Image (cartoon, rainbow, N blue to C red; front, side):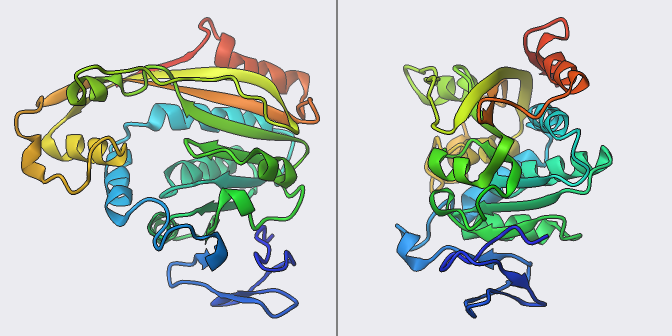
Length: 304
């Protein structure tokens, strides 16, 4: 099922061998990697919006080490629980970056016996290109697009996920089905605090605010913690670069004098919202979701 819609007129898109086209003949070429550019020029507020090629490459290198696998596993468990009643759920990943979380989430849904339709987009062409290049089986529909003008039809998604990207509540409420779910991941107060201790004379905690999103009701907050030791100049450099805490133009020799390893606390929060103030639930489904939070601990912990 094609989830993307024409960003010009909103009509359904038909996927051809190398193009997406709507009934009004608005056409969008598919890149060799399989993604489409669905970000009109009027929505581009920079010549090259989003993460740079260098930042995307750094994030991919670090994520490939498995450093965020615990958080990804927690996300997968939550979403699989929310969609457990649906044999063929529709999933949208807003601000998908280089596709690490999207790909693992689709794999988890398939492993649970689902046949999901998944669409993922990011404002960065470099990120989407990297994501699509790795998706050899074309399990996900990829596009360059903005969360503030999502090229997806109204009430198309059973679940929308936003992992560390800006929230566009009005658009998210439009895209998620009644009774559907919105899962929002944000950094916790001390997420990657160890990096700030290296970089700043006065490291600071992240501010976590309770924000009301019209069209959604807060259902649950699930903290996810992991401890991670990062060693080697390559992994350390990739981690610093992907977090945008230093200028990517800072030469590699600047790493000299830094610690040879850093022990980090990853502290993220999965926030589960539902439309219409209710979740699609069964007794078994609720117990499975509560199990993430109440399985003897109020949070998810992993140690590497």
